[in-house]
Length: 184
Image 1 (cartoon, one colour):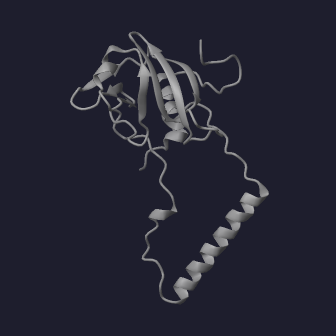
Image 2 (cartoon, rainbow, N blue to C red):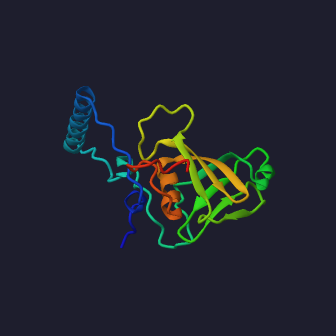
């Protein structure tokens, strides 16, 4: 039995897909027809592919069976903040990880891990990462500002990575209707 996809497990409302224009849809349909014709010709000529379908797209990240394991595809990089342990990194940046049982920052090199209490960690802001124009998608690089006792952090990761962290920490959905959930 497979585990659920992270995007189906999170409590935050997912960003909507951008609708394609007529030209983009027609281009995609033309590309699909060309690929089908090329495959049919390959089969007719005896040059059919050997069954490798790895190029058909990546499997979306899934919730790990082990509650202590993070989703390997969803790291957040700590790009700034005020925590004392941020000074030990040198040139490499720490990585923020979230699993169902814990949240921690993996410090570069042999510096170890710093456990974070996600029940006291709060989301202050969520924006598109610098240089990103949008639209918001599951893969959109975002910047989140987090605040907790003794540690204010700025992290960058995909929207899905930050939403997974927010889901585990029970943060309100920053995109939900009503009063703003971020910045309280």
